[in-house]
Length: 248
Ligand SMILES: C[S@@+](CC[C@H](N)C(=O)[O-])C[C@H]1O[C@@H](n2cnc3c(N)ncnc32)[C@H](O)[C@@H]1O
Image (tube, rainbow, N blue to C red; front, top):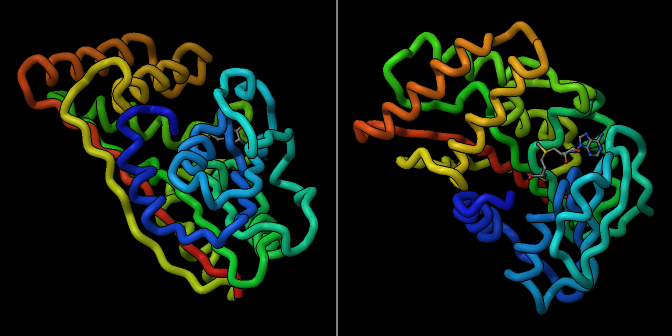
């Protein structure tokens, strides 16, 4: 969540957050704590404690975080190592799809939230990402291959996780549920932009010999995006589903 362009998404999320005084907040799957740093800036007078957890600490050293943010290694696919009723707000972005027992995670979020507390889970709907470019079949192939190919660190993968989040929480009957969608749209293919960075992530498919996309196909895919940038037709669009639940 550190990309400059993602700040519009953070703004859409922050508008949905109403923290009590001395709030205790958690980010599950926090990576480099970019969201918590932004939250702390937006609600600095309200937050007493902010805890970010991730299955690995490999990104923690890159973080410019400070008190009251604390980071811990924790596997969110298991019972969460937090006491009952301990948080006013629990956040998670693009982590749910990596966990196979989603019902356990939903019930764990309910357990660690205080009654009336809020959970917000933000998930990209990977199969709904769009680039514009000349070669429709190839661009669709690259996007689909990335959406459905499981990376080694993932316990599970669901390329439709964005549209599924509402149902996953709502059917538990543990939350009052609502959902909205924030679409990040870019018209420039440049370093530092979400669509540019994402196109580089797709290289993983041939670098790791997944068989899902060849180097030739990847190079052609990148050429299509560069050409679209040159002729003024480049578009990148990424929809984030924002699930909001109030703990019953
Ligand atoms: C796609 S990244 C999203 C990171 C961050 N939430 C963001 O939006 O920028 C997914 C994160 O979830 C973490 N993760 C995956 N499985 C996890 C698990 N079982 N428990 C905790 N974290 C996990 C990964 O290490 C990674 O940091």
